[in-house]
Image (cartoon, rainbow, N blue to C red; front, top):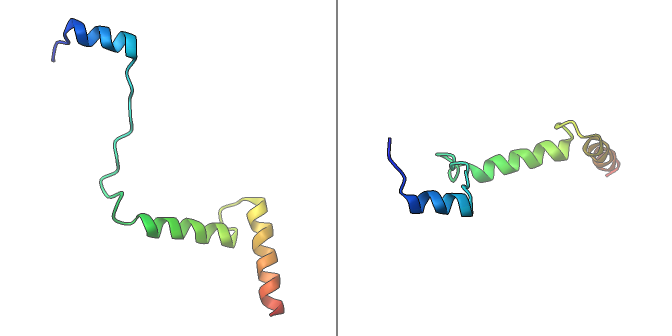
Length: 66
């Protein structure tokens, strides 16, 4: 285990320590498909939101009229 210097410890006490989430290994590969799939689920009302289901029903009714 590495020993921290006094300066490092003082800086951590004064400035704080920030823990960040590491990036996913394949984050850049299929980002757009993932977003489109989420948008598709929202538009169809499949994700469970009552407002999204209502909007989806309105869209379907409008599509049937045309």
